[in-house]
Length: 56
Image (cartoon, rainbow, N blue to C red):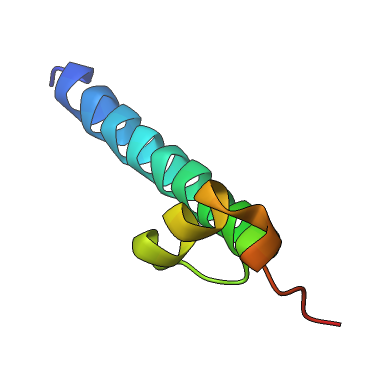
């Protein structure tokens, strides 16, 4: 049996899990900074930071 297909599939799974982890970490950082994940709200905050209301 050729192990190459199994190794390639395992590599693809690991890469997809790592990519998902990076995406989730990025979302967490965005939420911590802006307290929202809505693109329109984030753009408004970036355009006029004085309109930004901090929580707590």
